Length: 343
Ligand SMILES: [Zn+2]
Ligand SMILES: [Zn+2]
Image (cartoon, rainbow, N blue to C red; front, top):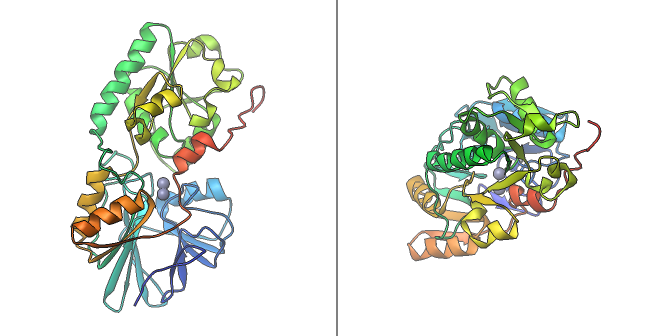
């Protein structure tokens, strides 16, 4: 029996009559995390982790939300459902489903390194594992977070010495919060683009103790921002909004920076290889550690990863979904519409 079917609305559990991260409106949706490709409008009810709820409220508005703690089982039509840390962003969870002795797990997006905010990825033993594959090629191989943070701090201090503002391009939900302690350690003031600040404020309102920041407004004095640090979404690059920081230097924080040409293509002064996803080895280690007999591979390099797993003797299939890379979407497709003269 298939606990999960891959339908044109999303991942569907027929025994429980619910969907996970559906891309079309459904009656009951379980949401792995608040990124836009996994959490969409229009469903009648949403089940998520406690920490995801304020983020879903921010992005989807008021809805019928139910939230649970990690490892707190709920029964949906006799399917035992529980959420487990995925380590991707705040609140991100894997979904474990158990029915008549059969266990399936869907990862949503995940990362193996504990970033200090998102929790430590839990390896959940299962018969069938549905994994993402965003960075599912052997070239993707991350360094420890602290090493990347050291490099970023050196870059910031060097810019500061030259009287330049450091503008860090980072995804507004996930990467931006992860960078705050790294930047705070330099002792320099931190300014946030409105899109990043909205997420920040929602988290502070939900009780998160995050470093002190200031929102960039038209009234923020140029003098104050000189030599300071700004976090902005990639879509702010090249806009009039960013020009006010002149002289400034742009650093892009993304797993995609592993590919050299991408730093140039993005017109960045620096690229920092910092990802909220598992790298190639992280994917392989996690998949093997679950002990799954069968693996379905979703969004990313699914054909490369599933072919490799098959060669390793693990039954693997690629699955077509409408999940993408929300970070790249934000960088390239979404205009920020950040007002220049009013808030
Ligand atoms: Zn995500
Ligand atoms: Zn994803």
